[in-house]
Length: 98
Image 1 (cartoon, rainbow, N blue to C red):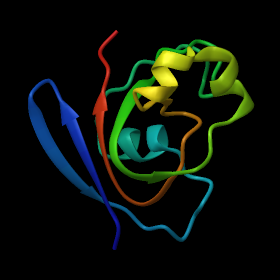
Image 2 (image 1 turned 180 degrees about the vertical axis):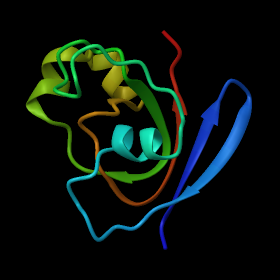
Image 3 (image 1 turned 45 degrees about the vertical axis):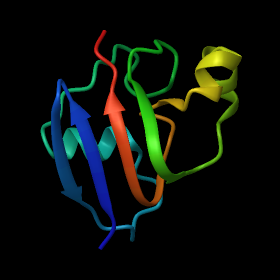
Image 4 (image 1 turned 180 degrees about the horizontal axis):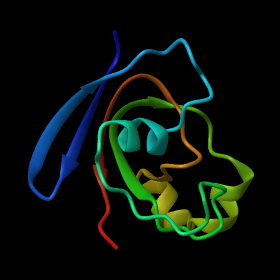
């Protein structure tokens, strides 16, 4: 079973998840494991509050919403919107506090 490794305020969590539902976003998975991720738009990518930094692993390609919201520098540094990115296997990430 794939694993989501999450860094939250200097704490590392490993969360197993079932890849049978490819529509689940990183935010969905984090919410399901009670890991707080800021969001004011209901997961449609408009607020930009659910920032995570993907340290390793693969996620779905950047969405047009992410390209419009994130700067080129943020994209290069691995920033993603948790509501838009979907894990494609094991992923290590850091939740960015707002």
